[in-house]
Image 1: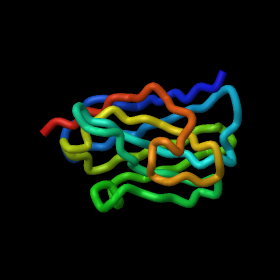
Image 2: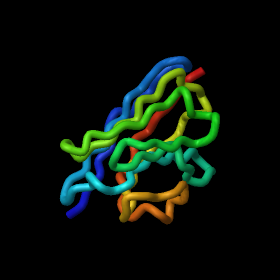
Image 3: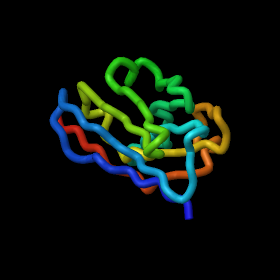
Length: 124
């Protein structure tokens, strides 16, 4: 059984930082494109950041670039999302996702494996 398990969410004040982790089990994703998405109440799930197996990264628009950093440890089958200078608008449930190939875009449909999500709440 393939599982993606996120951890590291929580409540933080605006300006603070959180570090999310996503550990995969059941198969290796060392060559797969991996990503982080988020979904706020009443809104669609949106792409936050993605990373290929060589470490090449893609970020959502200017709203997170420069504040969030995605990384991966292929040996641990784990990806990370370091979130700095958090803002209340970053409040959402954050999901880890794995694509089926070495590349994926920003659409949720391109990812075949999903974690259960971890809640991030940023207070003002």
